Length: 317
Image (cartoon, rainbow, N blue to C red; front, side, top):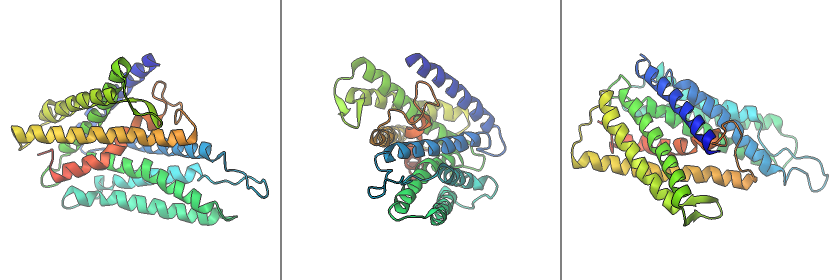
């Protein structure tokens, strides 16, 4: 398992690094990285429906008639909604938003709203018996918001631009890479520290493998990841912060620590859904990782929080 985790991780890092390099030199920021966002949202949505389907097995038969009750949303509705949200989030690539980055995030809200409306219309067309439409619709909205809406903020991080950040997209790439580096360094640090010296359980019922020792190791390595990306990597990309000395160090430390906490919450959020469904992994797409959601959970959960911190100027120019 560990060998697979290391091999798959090395391949994923190489692919992401190559696409990030191409994206950095692209005249349209985000163009080369967009397929990863589309694929992540699409596969993540499918995995969420799989979790819902597993959870629903206890309730699929009508108590009076014994007939099956289809209480989970269809995959094509959830996947289409999630993908639509992410696609519309890329709208600033072709229709630049005038003003600060907050205005650009409105495209993600528009995509999410349209996807929810689509899910409602589909439930109208599917309706046959009482007692299931609300459940299906609630699950569809949750899956669309989680896999599509949160991924939309990953997109918005890459597209950060405006008066403070310039229009060439370099700061947006640093924003995105900082989230990936901090969350994945946290995951790595927590995993190995927990294996070596983990003793005290963090959440014995929800995620028995997580320990406070692992969390400390994750925090330490997450801080290192934040310092590397926001320091030397940012300078290499020509992104020089106006902050200096204690202000810069404090901003990076606060930013990294907040994202580490968000990353842990993201891991636990998927653990909640998997445990409620009685499954260990969301899928078997990625050997050693368990599934696309298991790989992306910390990144997409942290993305909206990171976006707010960038807009507030905790880090950046």
